[in-house]
Each structure stands twice: as C-alpha cells, then as structure tokens.
Amino acid sequence: MNHFGLDIWSNKNFIVENGEVKLNYKSMPSILELVQEIRSNDVRGPMLLRFPHLIKKQISSLYSYFDKAIKANNYKGNFNAVFPLKVNQFPHAIDAITKQGKRFNYGLEAGSKAELILAMSKTPIGAYITVNGFKDKEMITLGFIAAQSGHNITLTIEGLGELETIIEVAQECKLKVPDIGIRVRLHSAGSGIWAKSGGMDAKFGLTSTEIIEAIKLLNEADLLKHLSMIHFHLGSQMSDIAPLKKALREAGNIYAELRKMGAHSLDNINIGGGLAVEYDQHTKSKARNYSIDEFTSSVVFSLGQVMDAKNVKHPNIFTESGRFIVASHAVLVTPVLELFTHDYQEKLLNFKPVNPPLLEELIELNKLLSNQNCIEYLHDALDHMESLLTLFDLGYIDLQDRSNAEILVHNIIKRALYLKSADPTDELEQLQVKLQERYLINASIFQSLPDYWGLNQHFPVMPLHYLNTTPLRAASLWDITCDSDGEIGFDPEKPLYLHDIDLDEEDYFLGFFNVGAYQETLGMNHNLFTHPSEYTIEIDEDGHRIINEVESKNILEILESLGYRKDEILNKLKGDLIKSDFISEQEKNDTLAKLETFVEQNGYLRTTN
Image (cartoon, rainbow, N blue to C red; front, side, top):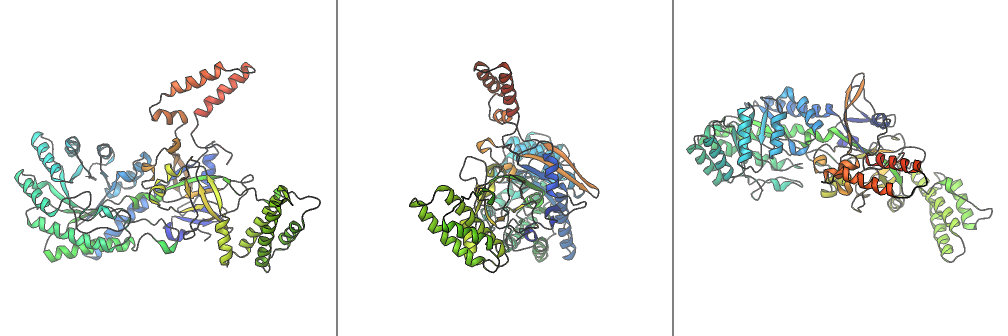
C-alpha cells in the first residue's frame, strides 16, 4: 500500500527511493526535486510535467512487439502506426511524438480540418497521415493538397456521400489523388466504456451493401487503384481481447473478398486504436485482461490465419493507438492547501487547571496507549466521547472541554490505526472511513481530470514524498472550484490513504499519473481555471533539463479568450480605484500596483503551499 500500486500501473516508469517518487530512467531525478526547482521561480498552483522519454519508450515498444509477432508468425506484411491527434493536440506533446517517432516513420491521424492542417505541418514527408471522421468537400480537397505536397495520406471514407465527393474533386482538379480507405461497419462490437464504437449500430462505417457499391463507384471513376486500406475501430481502452480477435477475422475476410473483387492496390488493414492503459491502483479492478505481447500476437496471428485460408496477400497492419503512446508521459502535480480536520492537533489542546473527570481519563488513555492496549483504550475513548457530548448538550461542560475531548479522541484513533496498521480490525477500517480526511488540492478536476468527472475514470494518485512512512488517513480530494462535483471521494472498494501532515510546517504534494491522453484536450475552463503551467523534462545520465515552459494564462488572458477586452476591464478597474477615497496618494499607488500584479497572475491560488 505504501507504494500506491506502482507495480500495477507504472510499467516500471517510476520507483520509490528514499521516500520519494523518482523517474526510473538514467539519472533518476525525483519528481519532488523537479517541482521544487520549478517553484523556486515563484511558480504556484498545479503544474503538468511532460517526460518525452516515456513517449519514446511507448512508440518503441509498440513497434518492437509487432515486429516480434510478425517474425514469430512468418507474417508477410509490415507494421505501421499513426498517432490520433484527438488524444492530445498540445504543441509540446506533438513535438515529442514526432521527434521520438521519426526513426519509425511514425505518422499522425486527423479527424477534423484543423487537425488535418496540423498533421500536414507536423508529419515528416514519407510518414503516414490517415484522415478519419466526417468530411466535406473542403476537407477532402485539403487531402488532395496534402498528397500533392508529397504526403503519404489516406482519406478514410465514412459514407458513400464522401466517396462521391472524392470522385467529384478528382474530376475537377488536376492534383494528385490521395490513397482512399473504407471504414467498414463490423458486426463485432468492442468491450469497455467505449464499446459502442464498434458493432452494427456504430456511428461510423459502411455496411456490406455500401462497400460493394463503393467498389462499383471507384471502378466507374477509375479510382479503384487508389483504394489502399480498410479500417475499423472497436473503441478506446478495450478491456477484453476476445472481441478484437472476432473483429480481426471479420475484417480480414472483408479484405480478402475485396482483393478478389479487383481491389488489387488494397494492401493495408487499419485496426484503429483501443490498446488499453492501466489506470487502476488496485489489483482486483485491472483495466485489461491482456498484455501488449498478447495483443500484438493476436492481431498478427488472426490476420495471417485468414489470409492463408483465403490464399490472399498478407496486408500491412496499421494501428492508431493514442492513449497507449501518451498517457504515461504527463504527470499532474498539485500541492495540498488544507486538511479539513487539521485542527485536531495536540498542540491545540488547552486544558484548564481542573478538567472534568472524563476528560482527565481521556488524557490518561492518550498517555498510556500502546500496541497491547490500543483496542481496549480506543473503546474506552469512544465511550467517554459519547458521555462528554451528552454532558455538553446538558450544559455541564463548555466548548473548550468539548474541543479538548475531540482532539484527544481523534488522536487516540489515529494512534490506534498506526499501531494496528499491519493488521487493522474491521472496526478500525470503519473508523477510517468515518473520519476520512478532506485534502484540498490547488487544482481543478474539471480542467485537469475531466474524465474522472465525466466518466468516473480513476487515475493513479500518490504523494511524491513521505513514502517511507505509512499513510493512514482515508482520503477524499477536494478541488478549488466552486462546485460540489469537484471532488474525488473516498471509495472503500478502491481506497486512497494519505499522510497526516502539518501544512503549517511542511508542504505536501500529490501526483496524478497517466494523464497525458485526452485530459488536456477535454479540460474545461469551469470557474475560469485554465490549463496549468507545463514543463518538459529531459533526462540524461548526468542530470535533467527543464524546457518548454508554458505558463498558465493570467487572469486577463483568461477573460480575453472568452471575448472580453482586457484593456477595457483593466481601465475600468483602475478608474474605479482612482475615483475612490484613499488616505494618501502613496496608498492609492500601492493599491493600483497590487491590482496590476494580481491580474497578471494565473487564476490558481497563491498560498505558501
């Protein structure tokens, strides 16, 4: 429990050493060390740390496992991959993806006009671009322009109307025709939250009848030679391997039939994404029932088996796995601002010269508590607390006596939990839940962890330090938004335990891991909290470099992004102040200076933590 399920979700990317979370790579810096270095420049609020070496690791892993499976199965096709831009379009993520994937000819997938323009500008010539999603004539023409510019691009049609537009554009202009793909609507459905991406009622794809009609249209337009790919996608984060195997057999047979129908340039099957990432910290609720080794072997073996049975050329295999590539590369770090039972500290005890007898007994119980008597003394303390509360209601003890009793009983419970941490009783576990601590984090769940709010997608979370001591506080996390949904509640089925920290004396930082996929692009500006400051960390044998600093938007920039004019807002604020009464001109100038400073800061809280 001390290591928060690292062996389940971290893929050996992070380790705990000397009580701190460290990168398991080259010089192995601790994340706390990186955070303190960044904060030494007066940075406050949450921060997103990017580790491009983890993108490199995932891309290399994907290609190496497919290459291994191809050799083991004597498969005659090649493996290629593209990254779907919808998963993370942020500049420094894309720069890392294209840089780390260059030696593999790793490409990009686009699903909108803006993403297509981004793909055309960022994909190296020769690497693949695939274009999915609904397209109009303008977007299809952009695909022709990409082909004319030298890009290896495939336009995947989602319906016959798109194919008719491709034919129209091909007839109207003299630009090079891009490769054409057909999204096939499989009978097979996926598994997990996003299973509706596959199956006969899926949003995208052509039915068997429509596929036959598409082949006819391509033949008539003399464009069948440009049909190079069929595509399917069962959904993101596939939890079970069995539906994929079924889908591969179905798609493989469709491919073989189309080859026999004269689609001799058809060389590729794109299996979409769906390779799951492990987010859970608890063994009993793992996200997938397969390894990447089994995944790649299943894909290669299943397709090879169909092609051999049909005596058809083995297709090249494409994937569009995005979550697998980037989820691990980003870590959200946030300080804890407050503990809501922080006042139950022994230093806040304030005894009288003469205390009520039951309170004196609590004082003795607290002094004499040991491993041998802690359960008995705990029962006595709880009983005394009930009696003292009754005495308070009847007016026989005052508020200070009640406060002292609450602090003592709270402390006895915490010490009993610590003494029995190796083998806690059911009673103690129930007390943990009842006395759970609320940790206020300087972040917005809506902005930085939207899938938790929208889909109840849990993310690995753990403190960055104090990991050489046992965390005993059942923890729920509250964000700083003005919204009751901004909470990650304590779940006894998936419990999170954190440390009891005196925040007046020391900082306490939490890390949220595997947040590199979707969270940034889906993050919403609820309460006008925007993307946290981000930093890329390059690590080598001698140390590390912090580069690509992108500060969170300041308050005026946030308002300007919504359509307000920041000069009007600032002039109005200044004007109101100037017209108000001040004791002195110096006080007015000081106040104006403070105002200008505050609006130039980001919207997160600026406490000492």
